[in-house]
Length: 332
Image 1: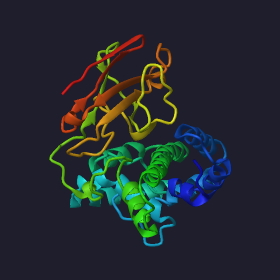
Image 2: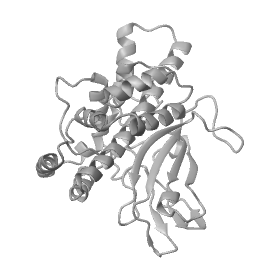
Image 3: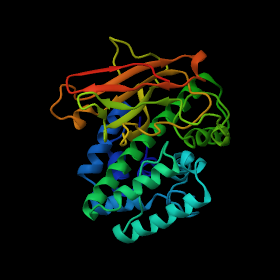
Image 4: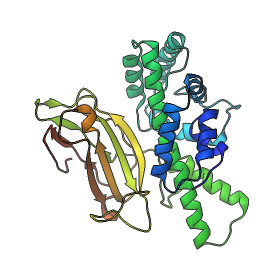
C-alpha cells in the first residue's frame, strides 16, 4: 500500500521519518512497512528528528493544541488516551501535570509513553520510575516508546486503507464528505477494528473493570513473576483467510497493544476496556528471548479464537515459562 508524507507524518511527527517512508513506499504488507519504519527510525533519524516527533504529541492528560500539525495525529492521540482519561480524577491529573513539568525541566522534552490501554495510575507510575534515569538513557527509552506508537498508528493507517478499499468494492461510491467521516470514525478509535458498531462506542461507559483479554507471566524456574518481559497483543484482520498450520501469516496480524510485565508479572492493559470484544483470532506474543537470553525460545506466541457467542466473556491467557519449557491455559 502507498501513502504520502502527510500520512506518515501523522504516524510519527518526524519530517525525516515521513520523507524516508514515503520514498520507500509502496509496501506490499503492513509487516514490510513496520520493518522499514524501525530501520528508518533507529538508523536514519537523528536525535533532532526524535525530539521533533516527541514534540508532536500532546501532553498526556491534555487535548492537542488547535495548531497541531496533523488533524489525523490529533485524533489518534485522543483515542490513545481513552483509557487514561476514563480512569482519571482531578487529583491524579494534577499530580500527572506536576510530574510532567518536573520531567520536562530535567530532560528537555515531555514525557512520552505508548499510552494505549494504560490507566492514569499506570502512566504516573511509569513516569516516576523513569524520572531518575540519565538523560541519554531516557531519550533512548522515549524513542522506543515513540516506535511503539508509530507501529500502532501504521496498523491503523493500513486498516483504514483496507476498509476503504473493501467498502469501495462492495458498495456504490459514497459522497466525498461521507467517505471522510467514515475514515475519521475508524482512525479515532483506540484500536483498529473492522466491525460495524456505532462510531461513538468509545464514549460509552463499560461495565467491565478490566480489558476482555489479559495475561500474566510466571517464571517457574525461579518460582516468581516474570518482571520486565515485553508482551504484545495482535488480531488477525485478513478477511480473505484465517491463520492455520500451513498458511502464511504475512499481512494478517494487526497490533492491538504492547506492554511490559510489572513486578507481579502482569502486562497491564493490552486493549481498551469494552463490554463486547470483537470476535476473531488473537495472538499474544512474549519476548522470552530478551527476558531469558540463554533460553531455548526466542519468543513465545499463543494463538486463540474468540467466537461470536463469547464476545462478552473474559479471556485470561497466562504464560508459565522456564528457559526450556512453557505452558498456558485459559484462566479467569
